[in-house]
Structures are given as structure tokens and as C-alpha cells.
Length: 309
Image (cartoon, one colour):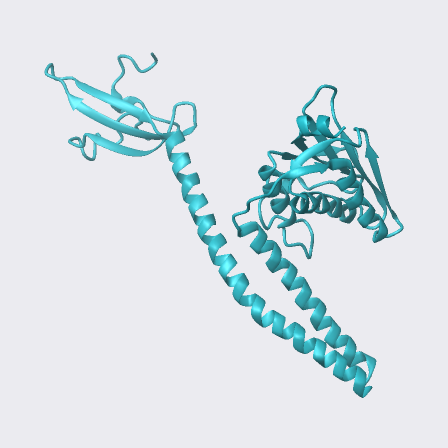
């Protein structure tokens, strides 16, 4: 209503651009265009404009807001680019793996040869450092291939408490004494989910490892399984009392190559998030008073659980 009765050439946005007919002075015969404008409220919009002359000498102008459509096009373009990069990365990773295996093999032969000849511990240690470096690069390649590949899962009924307890026990046996790792199961031991045990272990192992690294050798990591009464969803929480997550990376946590670690690849959470989606589960991150909590919410296999109770 604010535009009724006003001259189209006088309606300008905050930048001084004519909103209804930006080409009226430069090209008065032009009857259609599509462009970015700054609207009266200051927002940027993508507008399609068409006009037609009426018999009484007036002009009919039709404006269509294409902002949402344009953003969707941009998102599709980004997804296509990411897919192409994923395929390229997978191909490069495969090619890198072959020479890496050769380096690892020859470094192993060198170490054995040095041990037999008695040429000294320093040289043997250098050979082992080469092998350790190869293993680290190989792990990065494995994570990259895992993230880039099209994953499918073979679901089967899994006792969730037993699975989480096994993962926590594995970390407890190899965790520094300064880290207090605790497991609290607040659900029935017969709580069952439909899932792929290998991929579920990857999800929870990544979350627990991140929590252990967040406390930096001294602190508490609590893993909890809980479920609201009559709920068909179970929640697995991994909570630490570390330094928290920087604000600048919070919105990008589950994107590939986003990391706060000096030697991290930034693929752990991205892979965990991808595998969670395959299980119809969702991962969320929450700030705590002195720490962070990651929560995985996934559906339970109610009928299977009842049959196995």
C-alpha cells in the first residue's frame, strides 16, 4: 500500500537504486530483468521484473521474489561442487595409498636390517618414525574415503548398553590416569536399536575420543544412556569438563575439515554425523558450565526389544 500512487522512478532502496524499474533511465524499452536489489527494509532480494504497456497509456509491472529459488540454486551448485570434490579426493586418496604402502614396507625392512646388523638404536628409531608417519597419513586417507564414499548400512538388532559399555571399556584401558572416564546406563540392559555395529562404534568412539582430548589429560568424561518414560527415542550423551568449543567454529562443527586441534583432520565429527543420519539419529552439541555435551538421539527398536526381553 505504501507504493500506491507513487512514481516508480522515485521508489528507491537504501543504496539509492530504483527498486521497481532500475533501467528506466538507461533503457526505457527494456521490459524484463532479473537482479539483486536492496528492499525498503534493507534486506537483499533477488527480484524478477516484467512489464507490459496498457491501452490507456499506463504500464503493468509484475515483480516476482526469487530470493528463495536463487538460494536453492546456489545450494545445489555447492552440493554438486562438493560431490565432484569428493570423487576427486577419493581417486587421489587411492593413488596415494599405493606408494604409502611401499614406503611402510621398505621402512619395516630397513628397521629389521638395522636390528640384525646392530647399527644402533637411533637409526632404528628413525625407521619407526617413518612407519608411524605413514600410519597417520593412512588414517587420514581412510577417513577421507569413508566420508566421500556413498555409504549403506546393514541393520541388525543391537543391545545398545552392551555396545556403549564395550566402547567405554576400550578407552578406559588406554586412557591416561588423569582422565576420569565414567559410564552411566539409566536404561534397561535390553534396550535395543536397529543399526550397524561397526558404524555405531565409529560414531561413539569419535565423540568419546574428542571428549578425552578436550580435557587435555586431566578431567572428567561422562557417557550416559537415558530415555524419557514412554519415549521411543534413546539419548546417548558424552559430556566433558574441558575448555569448551570456540564460538567461531560452533556452527561448522559437523562440516568436513573443521577442527580446533593442531594435528586434527576435522573429519571425525563429519563422519559421525553422516553415520548418525544413516541410523535416523541426530547429533547435537550443547555448552555446559565448564565443558561440552554431545548428544545422540536415536530411535529404539521397540518391537524387537519386547520380543527379546
